[in-house]
Image (cartoon, rainbow, N blue to C red; front, side):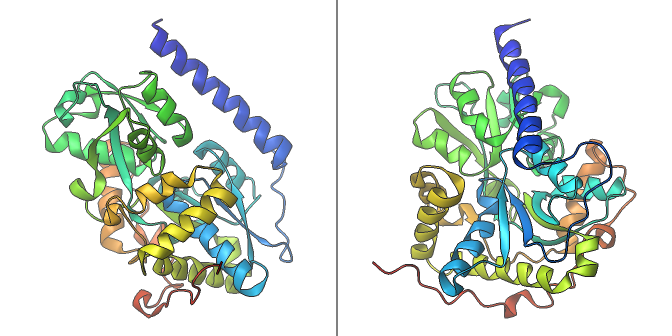
Length: 349
């Protein structure tokens, strides 16, 4: 076995072990036995990982704490998709941000889950080593590319881009990797290319060893990576809280897109209080260029999900037995244009 493949195997096994221990010891997730019942009096938990497509989660929490003294939900941070998925399925939290195709596939498996809003649009890049000879998608033939998850839209994006150039997903070696681990893997040449939500792609650029092969906004405009999902039980029994959550996420997105000062303010307080990252990462990806990621027009639209669904079926990760009305609940956003941004101008010095 080559050194590169050995490192990948070790990384996958180590990540799986850490995930299980984190879920069991820190979040008290039960892997066997009946799902715990979520009490209506328990503060509404919302899962997220430290990427820009989940940014509105901590922004909503922070703004509400500063405007009213407390938040109306509890944001729960995770580092990778396996632990997010297992924590949600265990009943630990009634809502989470999730990869769009993964949410759709869970519904296809019979999980009572509904998409109620989007995380953001665009905000993804494919990075290669600065000193590599990869300058076109065709140059990825035979190369190892890391994606966040089999059910990520980043995987579907690569599938679509390769197909448009007469290539197949089989022409590359694709591996799954938690987004926080991707920059190190690229720097150490354990993989040839990486793609996930920001700011981890921007990190490789800032640190001087990564080069953008493409930004999703340039090859799949208005790209959707993650969505806000809620259990049907919560929609039925805790609808006012779900509505308040969707409204808050929507208002935060519009606040972020109101001006660059808001984005830079968010980069500071989110990086320091929620993401445990250097604020320069968020400052970079939220401004270079400004349309690298967008937080408006985030109501789930049928035409967008039909495109994702078609690609998911064609690429073999979905069977095509569920459709837009099965996995999306549009009742929480009657008119997205009528939602106003938070009237908050940040902490004054």
